Image 1 (cartoon, rainbow, N blue to C red):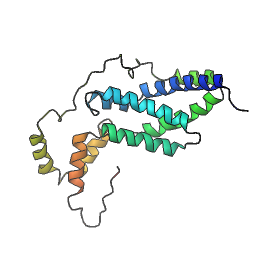
Image 2: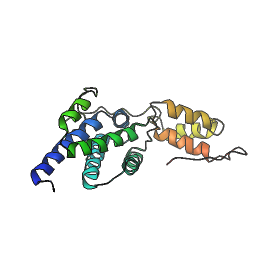
Image 3: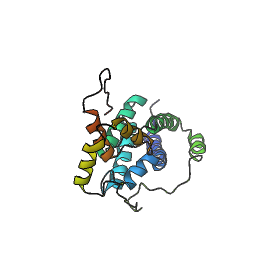
Image 4: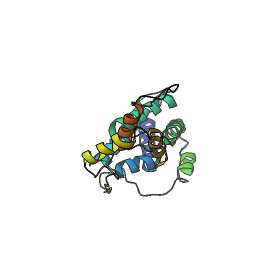
Length: 198
């Protein structure tokens, strides 16, 4: 039986609230905005990513977790130059698709019970909420200083740079990405193959 227009509207409205709850609790996205990874209007970019994800989920009937993960990872890479290595994106995708199915079946009390266990922070993905922009450490220094640092010790300490990048809140900043690229395209040691994620 086809869903009525009223049911579709109810689904869209409720699923939108679900997407907002999940994205407002996504710590890596907030850190990327607060650290200026998306520039001065990073908050607006984050809102657009949330909107796009909502429309993508609603507009595509049989998307897989992998497809949705690729979309969100690409958006984070393009818009924030950020890779999330903390498995938050697969978890978000799994929850979004699960809640989408539950919402279609009108299982809203169960969804609400689960979402109520999320930390009750203030919603920040709204134009009327001001997010403090703090440039990431190191990016405030001049490019010349950073370029000297890049060429100096990174050729020898490429592996250290990657480990530091992975441990600092599981995010890779622009400067760290530049350092990794510089390190990884120096001649690899014999017997080693360098593999890079996007």
